[in-house]
Length: 214
Image (cartoon, rainbow, N blue to C red; front, side, top):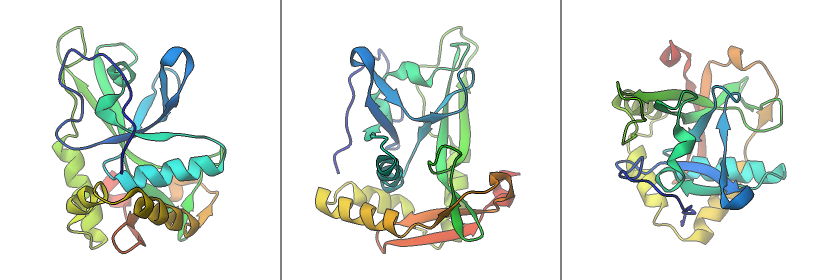
């Protein structure tokens, strides 16, 4: 698997350098990149994935809707996209999985896949953004809990293994994952379960999630 690397200038260490993290990006105007995210203009937040397969599934589903994205390393894109609206902090939405209702993955109003996310915000007392941005321990603990409920105790190792697969194997697994999805339109506030995909055994797992969001 070879995620796209996008050019940028960052005087600090690349963001998300401790744990490989991915975003969906596509070429924009004047050589810039558009990065997929959530929220409105005043509270937008980049969507990030620790699972490369989850990112590729999202990209593949978007492609079916005519929205083309590449999967890029979060640390390789312009760090400006992570700035909060006031320019003093950093924010990102860590994608945990997909919300499920009645055994089906929920869709957004625009036809895309809905998401279960954890908003991460990093601020300091300075007037400029912090020099680094990483997945925080609370987010990792939440991911551990979700994967353990699915019986996926070695999920971090599984993510690392995927990056060593051939492009052909990755593409085939992602194609089958998307083909096996069942989706529906519904009220996301009624969802109490989350869907994860296990790339090794090519299985979808649906587990309780509502109590982890309280």
